[in-house]
Picture 1 (cartoon, rainbow, N blue to C red):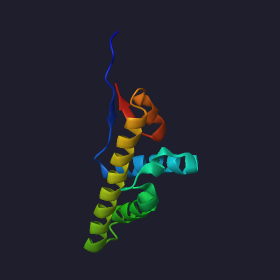
Picture 2: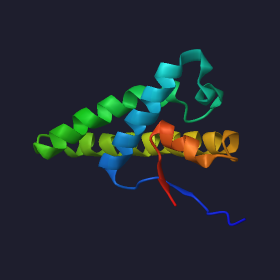
Picture 3: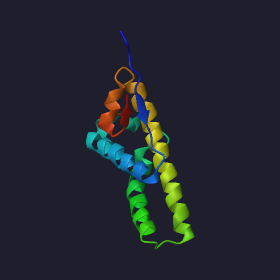
Picture 4: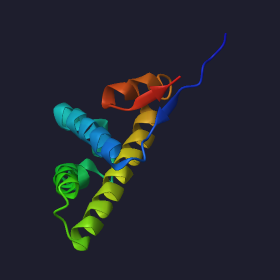
Length: 113
């Protein structure tokens, strides 16, 4: 039997990070107390989930060229936090669904076959 390896892609582009962050956080919120991501002790969505909206707003202001350097640094910090939560979520979900990694697609992750 031939088993095809699946790779789960985590983006580096800030816009794609925010998009994936919104998807993972939304699924986490919908699942409520049944979300497996409640097990995260660091980089949790309880700590970083609201940062997705903050980053989106700062991104919009960046596009309009209405930000000072201070806010640009804040935007970079938010993207790093969101990506850390995405990575932690990926790692936990992959452990849970290691027999069927395509389940991560339901959380918003892109699966490359």
